[in-house]
Length: 529
Image (tube, rainbow, N blue to C red; front, side):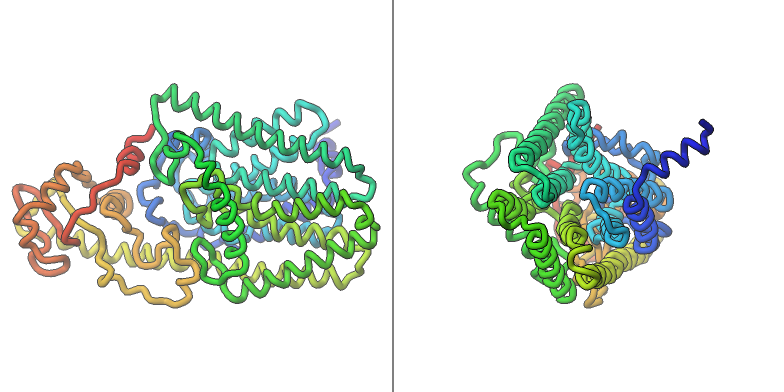
């Protein structure tokens, strides 16, 4: 058989809904995220990541370095965009296969939503890890796909893939958890599925998730031992290693469910991007999904089996817990939008319900679902590009400020090339003038609105990597000593005359009255390996 014949045979084996999902995800992703793929828009974390080998074992991400090798550890928007969408599209193929989509239209919408969901926009703001994080999402989906295989070898490979996915970014284990819940729900809604087999399937998926998480942790311990490292104190990771706060589980469960409710139904809530429009669409999506689900159960007489009602109700109740399981995994911090990609499975659930009753309810239910999905996609394209527009403006504002600051430094009386440069403080708020109301919808520390220079160290990153001005950041002792000196106290704040001076053979710039010392996790992060 020739190569062309083999390729044709493989193409024929792929079902049409999966093909549609792939191309819908890929094309939609490019159209929605085109701006970020054709521009370099650093946020504060990306300022020093023009080139970075992503050695993040101290954050528990022992596989991130290897996954990032595909883009040679360099921020290359076009290349990273291509790789990211390729893996997201492959994930869409597996998702539509797992959830047994029959409708090409609904499978295409599933792929489109997976690419356009605004959490991907937050991911692309961290462009230096975007392709690796897309691989993490793909591996999480692949792990589920492998785990449902009947042979033990598939289950074992699923466990390995889940461990590697968590080794890139732990938060995406929620993708595997939520998909597993949807699969058990889907099995209970299959007319010929027996009770015992459905329960055993649920046990199989639960055991795979537990085994994958355990393998991830064991491999992490090996990496920490070999590299002689400790977990960062950032986001409570080191506290987690000291023991889980089991006594706080009731409060954590309440917070987990409350955060999901706020994400979809509370406009302006923290760590969300919902506005009034999305809340209205989400209510429609909830009603449409419940209508389709009930219609299917009535048409197939599934409501007559008590065990089915019990499993369906249990899975629906667990979906919020599954998509936001990161709150339980990391009880010492609150999940950010970047960590909430699994929330897209809530919309996938609506599409699954519509697919189940597509032939029973006629075109009206399908048309309703398509209309809601179109509104969701409209929200997604606007929100993602609002993220990028706000971040781009902050970057340009930062460039303007840093360029003027650098001009003052080089024109300072007594300045000589190579002098030690001590800059104390960050840009004062009164010197920041971005005031665009729509930006408030996406305001978050990962979406800079006024400036990307959030901390003292970021100024040095910007001068070095973005303005091509080579300068070493002084040691902490120097920064503290200068900021507590009498000469510094007598200086006015920048941009007043005298705010940039040569003192004791070094250039001193006063942006703030006091210096904020680095936290322990920042120092450990700078020494990561």
